[in-house]
Length: 597
Image (cartoon, rainbow, N blue to C red; front, side, top):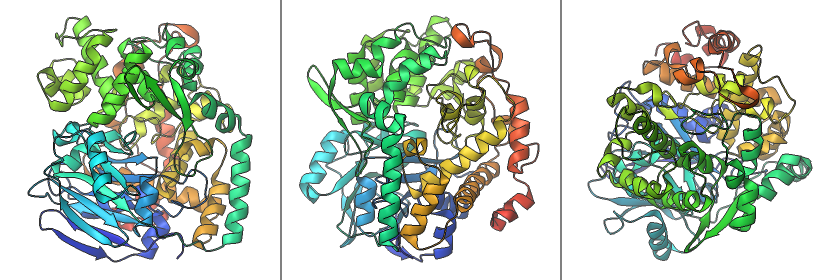
């Protein structure tokens, strides 16, 4: 088949063995690549209860059939593992160019297991795969590591590495590529650190075979035309970046602040996309081959980098009661160099701030204390003092000190920058995501409830949200497996993705096939979590969002009506009342291997 490179390699860091795995065409056709392939490997190979930070855990780098082609936003890559933050299956997705270079090295996936006896890095190239000594790199930040490895392996390479946070097993450590992009969520960097793996360096010049070049040329042209016509992908994101959402969400009354105590932020304008453009923007930028160009190259006194993006801006800013754009930006740069997920870092620090303010536990930091933010991020990365507790994530921290209700998490992962009390479907999406609290993996209901894409639905109604959520989750799982950017889905639907996939691979994919592949991927992930003991009891939200009415703005007085949406969601998905996929659902999706656990 075209599109795929036809090669999967397994590296056992404990023994040093490197071997090619059989390339099962049926598996790749049904699970596509990226997130889907990673989920299949984790289901097949991990025994229940395995410690995510043990040598037994797998770390799977994978790309998809559209990666590195002319398909819209196809410059991405994926990594999958069992999360040390949540204990669930998790995947993380990155932009930049790493995924493309990885594929040009001739690989579809790299399965990593075991633990190296000393720090190492992997060189993945079209000449072969090597395990190399990284002892001199251990302890260095991601900027330093990247520069040294590019000097060593060539400037045309791409580096994905961990910083001190990953080395010190911070449960929400990230893997950073191209210095500013991240496989961010779920602690994938900690898994990498637990294996003594400092970096994966990709280098290659191979081309991706296209089954029907003329058809691909035409469908790409049509897709790009839609992207250039849609107001979000042609105007909003290119002009103001992802933080264009700040004012929109604040005015809608769903922009959380002060650890979700409030649903609006009085200083939103000062951290908006418009403020970033006016005060710190150097130029707009983008991932490999992308026409949207939503990234922001920024500069503050004494430093320069990328971002902050919307979620980072919020997590390190308003959610901590901070509105100094320079401090937020500096914290963003620091998180990238230390290798920390900005969303979980901000969520954990804001939880500590509230614990202090309420007198439950003196964590030494209060809302609005931006001068301490950088200090606390360093403490977390190096597990120094209070940082050692905060490195465990907000749920473990708050539970240890007697107030788990102050952790704004689902399944242990910190939530994103949308207060679901004013967007019912987003509440259901948070609750049912397979990787823990997540706006994307749960199905980005904000697109329909607030942005009107592809059409506006009533954000305050709980009726009908089960089907909307499930369909978007299925499409999202497919896109994460192709692997392409979610922003493209503002303008492109499953019809376009099916046409692109057919042109690239030569395998016919109707729109229904794309959604079914996503359904299959979402269900095998769910079965992984069921095997780990997760069920309906875990498909819930922080008590604050279920019981404390939103205090202000257009959503004042509202809470999330979760139970009624959850029943509808389970029924639509073909799951039982406890959230377990029924046997007939698994058979429909060709997941017979899941029937016996």
